[in-house]
Length: 79
Image (cartoon, rainbow, N blue to C red; front, side):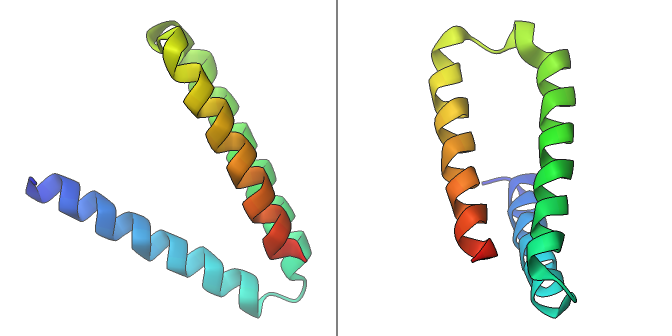
């Protein structure tokens, strides 16, 4: 693995731990996670609108499956 890949993985873990911490200490974890989901959807839509022509049709199954998994993951965190 290259150093850039390791750095990206570590940054991803750090950001995940940070937003998880913020959700635990927030006044309303449900509201915080709802805002996280809204921002995530907005960013994803913007990226897909720009990158859609570059994404092969065979990959869309994985993108949709990932979205469904994340929807239920966030739903379980809200409970």
